[in-house]
Image (cartoon, rainbow, N blue to C red; front, side, top):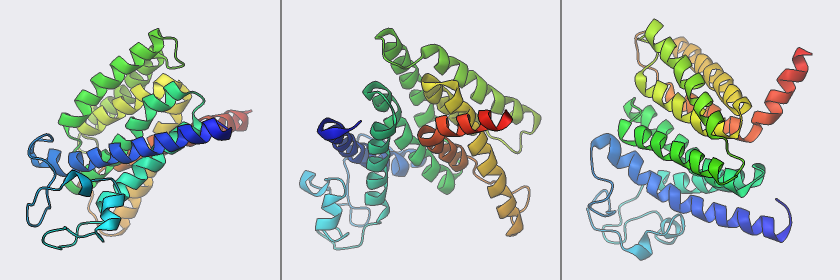
Length: 261
């Protein structure tokens, strides 16, 4: 996308990302704790005072309030605006690198979810079914609708990607149950579904980068004294591979194909 129109689309995408990031903060905090994401509304984590709509504007409110609750003046974690900002950047990036608005709209929310899954898995060592299962259903329906509407998103590719990546890690989980959880399998299926809608080369790159990063992370963890039986969250590596593949997938795939020749 170039010119004024392209800049406008990227700006709008970034603003949408800030809003989506604010919602992701709710998911990251509440879902692993078994709390409702609807009720009650947002409140100060220290004094419990409900946050007014004017104080709940992504990033801006945090800066205006100096990172503190308006009532009790206790500090609020900078993670909240950082997640919002990072999600905004991912949305804007998707609008920049993907050739169609339909593809960007399909992939951008998925990229934000990858960030959320990574944060949850690092802290709680789980990939919550309450998020990943509905995500699989929503993105499968979105891929089908976009495909039928003539958008450059392939429902068949989404199906193949889901089966290839999710099915591949499912086999790994069966062979080595201690090294791969079913949450990771479902996350891989979601990654394969969404990126498969763009093309299977995206899935191949995501799998390659995610597994490579996970292997390196495991070696580093062992070198720092972590035992082989210690749970090492694999979700962040899968998520990182998916995000990277979205932006560099075609280039990496072309490089690798050319290297083989």
